[in-house]
Image (cartoon, rainbow, N blue to C red):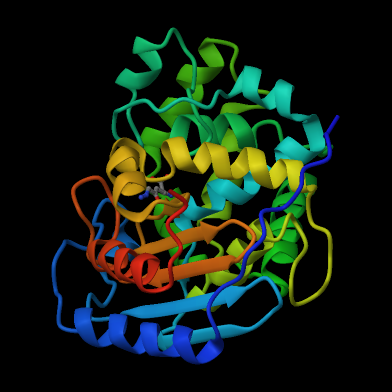
Length: 319
Ligand code: DON
C-alpha cells in the first residue's frame, strides 16, 4: 500500500545557467587524475581513467551535458537504487523495509562482517548484501522472468532499452566468489527470497547494464519527478516509492562515506565502481557524473568533486 506523496517543488536554474555551471565544472576538474580504477572486476581494470562526463536532466526532459556524457559504462551499484524502487513498488514499503532494512552499516559495500555483526540482516538495499536480498525478492516465475522485470524496469526509468554489457557481465560472473558467498550467507540466515546463486546472477546482470551519464541523469530525474519519466511520460513507480528510495540513498548511497557526502553535497546520491555517481535534486532533476578514478570506498573522486561544485553552483543542497 502506497500513500499519496506530494512531490517537492522548485526548479533548476535556466538552461544557460546549467550549461555555464557544467562547462565550469568540466574545466575545473578536467586535469584531475586522482583515484584508482577498480581492479577486482577484470573488465573494469581496463577503463580509461581520463574519461570524464557530466549530465543534468530536469523534470521536464531537458538534458544538458559536458565532456564524455555519451560514453557507455556499466551501471554497477547505481542499479541498486532502481531495483530497490521496483521491488518496493511491487511488494510494499513495510515488507521490503522489514526484510532488507534502511540503516547504514558503516562498513564497505561488500562487507561480510557487516552481516555477521547484524545477526544476518543485510541492513540496507545499497550495499551488496542488501542489493542481493532486494534482487531475491524480484517477482517472476523463473530466472528469465526475473531478469526481464529488472531490465524492463530500469529501461523504463531511462526511457530507452538498456542493454547488457556482455564483456563486463562475463568478467564479473567469472570472479564472483565474494557476492556468491554473501548470498549464501544471507540464505543461511533465511534472508533471501530465492536461490542464492541465481539471485547473484541476476544481480550481476543488473550491474552490467550499459548506461551513459545522460541515461543516469534521466533515471535520476524520474525519481526527482515522483516516478514520472520526463521523456516518455511513463509513471514508472509511485511518488511514495521515490521518497522511500531517496531516503535509503541519503543514509547509504555512498556506503560508509554517506555522512560525508550528505554533509558536502546535501542531496541523496548513488555511486558505482565503474565511476558513475548519480545525484537527485528532489522535484528538480538528476545530475550524473562519470570518471573511473575511485577513492578507497569505491566512489569516483572526480565525480564527487564535480557534483560538489554543481550542487553549490546550481543551489541544489537540500539543507
Ligand atoms: O557487486 C559488485 O561488487 C559490483 N557489481 C558493484 C559494486 C559497486 O558498484 C560498488 N560501488 N561503488
